[in-house]
Length: 149
Length: 300
Image (tube, rainbow over all chains, first blue to last red; front, side, top):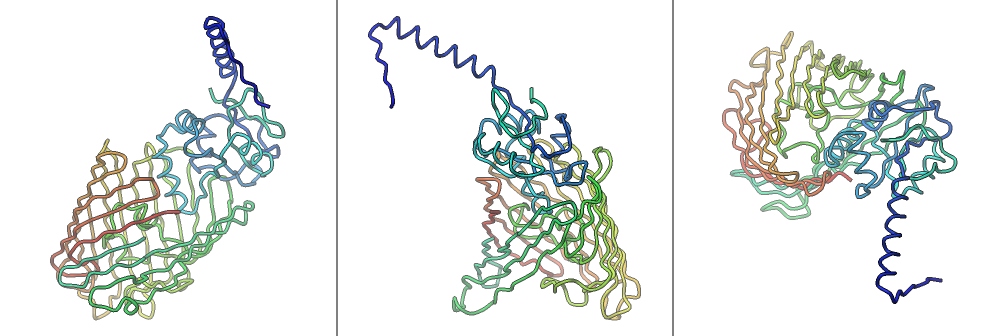
């Protein structure tokens, strides 16, 4: 059931709004962009340079020879924008053009998942998958390889 | 790609070309197949012709190969794939190239496809080039419908070096030898290509020089040379202006062929591009017709 609170005192309403804003600021301050991977990948940590190589499709297999499956968020996602800026260092449009060219050359671009939950589920279930989520704690069933500052 | 042509002195035509389907799988380091089939030249409307007659669409096996990852940065590709001579031939799909009209230099002097084995090495350090070495021991896996008569090749061996700097700038060098099928003729080709970005300006260029050995009697000369230069000005992320000049001296014709192109493109989204261009040509007429060309290309 949805509850609706009505505050008769403007001062009290203002205090509640401010408290909510502070709580929300605290929550987002705790959220981090985590590099997540399937539990079977044969690495324990990942540097940003290596993550860049994976999403630029220059690293195709893990050290044990199994395929690397990079996973991205949808184009409209703020998380993807942040990831593209911090890890790939290119505009979203430039990356889209690049992946289109690479796909034509036979290199499969990152798979797209449209929510953090879908991203986590895909990475959990697909061998070799690697992606990222914005979360305050690690999703269950995946390996955390690092944090994107 | 939907393409419209209005050649000078010819019939205007609307047709669907390069309607391609890709199927790609990644299973393990040994089994990573790639298939591309396409419908080419499907007629829609042609001036002075009944809409239901005229050109017939062709089904084409463009590519069929498997990639094996010998190492993280070393791939063995077996099957039919695009020949790595120049950037245009390796990304020739409508949504990925700047113009509807393809330069002669990017396809007339060599086989666009190679059926055989390729080794692709991608270095970790940008200072070193991506190296592709390939060999086609026999004929092609499927007939190339665009192949020019007397230019069907076998025993194709080649290597391509491609340097990429700052993600967008590419310089390539190519070397290839090939035998012409059903003859004692063979050829050696060297090529260079560049794609350089200077802010809103993009420069593309390619050059090929081919030498024929034991040339057939019908040949006018024992060599072939082509070069084109193109400048594009990206007004913003969507709109771009293009200008190109090409010089091509064919092995079978006395006069050189020259053409120039002016046009623009509109890309509302990265995989969708509208193009309109005017091409003028003089000297020997080869594959390029003078007139307007327009296209809508979509990569799904």
